[in-house]
Length: 480
Image (spheres, one colour):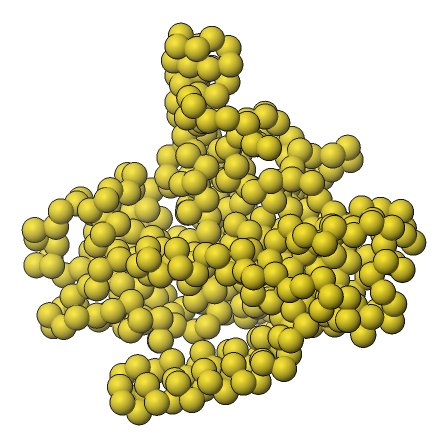
């Protein structure tokens, strides 16, 4: 909820402390849990253990210690000891509350929330499961040149997780990025690239990627990162998968949003919205807003609904300008459908498959961090990165389908070869188009940074030039 841009700001701000600023559990209670799960006390396993946690979330808290057997500095994730005994009560309360709401308000259909909680909460409370997820995520990126890094797990028990300690900062800490000469534009692009590969190519993705679960650090020696930094992904307790059909249809939906509006393109957008999100024409504009973070593209509304709009609608996502406050307000407010009835975003959320809702969280993350990083490239730059992975996903699906046809028939006909070549050529042309366009956007972003550098040099010398190019306000001081 803290990361969904479509919800009111007050709701999001109210939920944000639950990411890493909850009330900590006492060291005495943690000692009892540690003895129960590990068979020894904290002091027996660690030469040094900081009693003050570096982060406290709703399920667990993290401490720093020196691991005696390995001689390494480690992060120790400990579940809140009394969590399990209240878990069943919490789930029962959610179930009963949603049942009463449905009874009094039949249109309020969120009973799936209770089902999802019963399925996913036990998984998140099992750190052995989290360790397996981390291992699989590393395997998915094993042959990829990526800036993503996942800390090594040293020991995993149900309620205790000991892992490699990573010294870094939040990915949106501009001062930290400037101090280490890390380009914030490249950070934004890499974040989009990492999660696009998970969703569009791997079909298995991290479902809780809020900023509290992302660190950045300078790339160490022998790093696989193509840049001078690594993005560290934490908390692997919750992952979702996408079946091939949903993943490919979702890719096609994104590609239709990248094309200029026309009757055929608009029809495709609505077709794939139905296949991906179970969304009909009445709620399509709201779903599109949830997906893109924008009020709506040209053709999303009926013509009469567009009259009197306080902002211009783009033909495609490539044509989008920076988001105006008027558009942001339009997204947050309830939207009127074609019959003039009030439609809440919840009407969309209750229809969308759960996995697609989690994908919307990923979209909000990359958009939100692109804004927080104060990037100088176009706001559509991260969408271009998404599109490249979408093209690849569609091309791979075409190859798989054609290969299965060849195996079934036992020979390669001229028509099949023509279909294969047509699909490959379409992929190559679209991919090249996006490569050229992203190069242009990166160059424009570089020009903005250079202009800021020159202004900073004129006003405050070399230090001012460095700070201005890094997006820092003039009075910002160093991070402790």
